[in-house]
Amino acid sequence: MLDKEFKYYLDHQEELLPLYNGKYIVIIDNHVVGSYDNREDAYYSSMEKYEPGTFMIQLCTPGDDAYTVRYYNRVSPVITAAV
Image 1: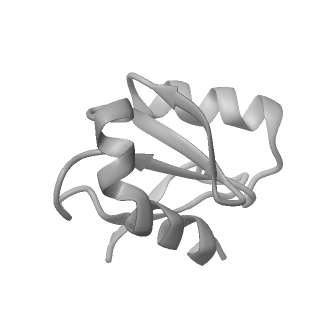
Image 2: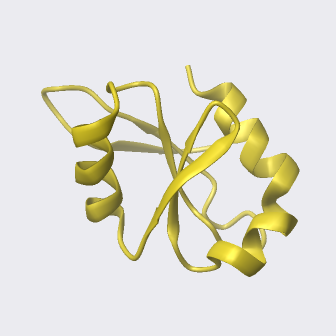
Image 3: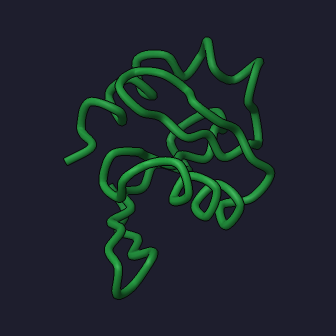
């Protein structure tokens, strides 16, 4: 799944905060490939560029309040489960 991307976010959260605080960031292969003001823009823009299941969208905020796992599929675009 996207464990590698989430681990990257956790390991680099303090570095990412000054750059992306309050933004939805898109992570692929241990790189931030985009930042957006809302989740919908992040999702639809990423779906135009990348294969489903290859990217993670994460709200960049301090602490662990925004830690979630999002599963994407063609039937239901967003299903959220707390970690």
